[in-house]
Length: 102
Image 1: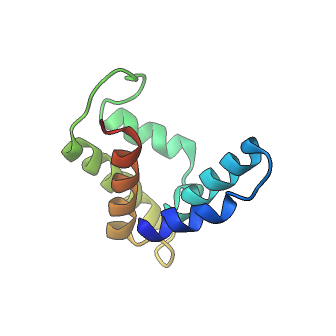
Image 2: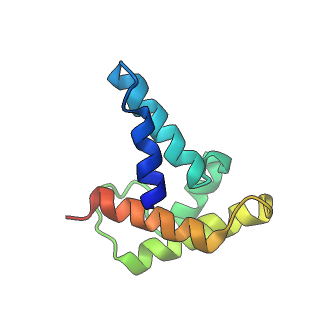
Image 3: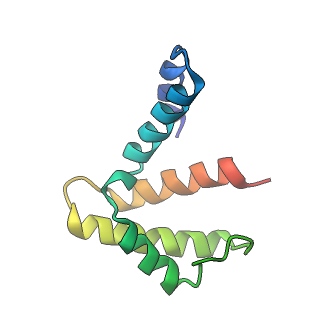
C-alpha cells in the first residue's frame, strides 16, 4: 500500500485536477485488478451479500473481507496468472479502510 501511495505522487505534476484525479483512480483500479472485473459480476456478488442498493448500510470488516474474497476468487478464475487473491484483498481492504474508516 505504501508503494501504491508513493506511485500516486508521480501524478501530482499533472496540471488539471480532473486529469490528475482520473490518473490516480485508474492507477489504483489497475493495481487492485478491478479493471478486469465486469460490472454484472460485481452486481451478482453484491446481491449475494445483500449489499445492492444499501448505500447507508454499515458493514463490518469481516463482511468486507467476505465480499472481497468472492470478488477476487472470481477474478482469479478468469485471470489466474494476473490476480494474486490474498495480495489484492489486503490492498483493497487497506485502501477502503484508509478511504472510508473514521
